[in-house]
Image (cartoon, rainbow, N blue to C red; front, side):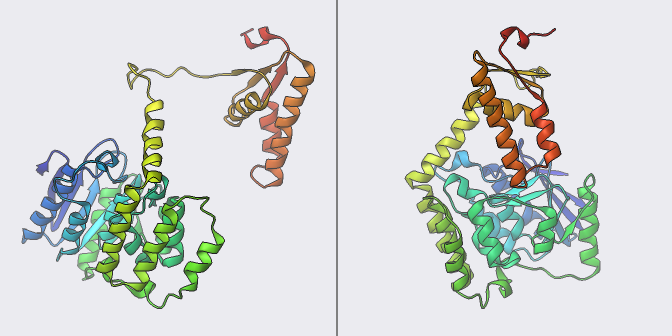
Length: 376
């Protein structure tokens, strides 16, 4: 095995070059990873003994996205688009092996591979809209070429990931691999490609699903979706429209311009600020990551009003017994009735069964005595 850099390794398994990316905790596409991946691809291409390349990630996930901490910094090294250009230039098949999540730039990179395999538990998505952005490295161009325009519109505007099984059905994934043996399965898949004489498939050239698409698809999609004032979903629709109406390279440039405009918008800046603030709020200064977590066996809630009832419901839904304390019997009765009504509404909407609603409500006990919160 050759260490290309601190986050990229290259090894050869017979005729297959294996590129392993290792940038914990989520293999974010940092500058070092981008530089390392390009260098590893070039080395594999130059090795006459290599007939195909397998791209895989170490740790708990595939590439879970771009390193968004770099968004407001000046680009000094290779861009993600440079990585994809190197993949598009490959003369040998590239197989991408996915576990955990392939999100944002991770999925964009996977789509530049010629074949994709994944374990059943893997999730794939373009969640950029949650940060007020559109995919900025070909996501809105390659995704419709693989799964069709309508499903691509859904994925880039709601940001929700899909399962590997759904990816297989849609054409985003070519095969599912054993959950605990991704690398061996992916190597076997790659060797079979070589044995069968399978050719390189550049996603950028697969135009059959973006050819002859009626414009009404886009107008109908806009009419049937309410984005509640968020700008990025509409911009993402425009980018998918470009995949249908423009040559690939022109549409890719259009997507890039839209991404930069979104990145500089006040809305995206606010959404990114909220993202980092929420992550920071979940960390307690001075508390080590390996601090043991105390087990929770039961919960006490003071007050049966809107807030107290909601808190009690959350814990009851998590299978924990809850005691609600009130100072007034009428207030306690109202609070418990509200919780019961909410469960009944969930049953009517088909979210939970009647049996489950009864079980959850049974975990909640009301009392007027504060001492009932103590252990007996």
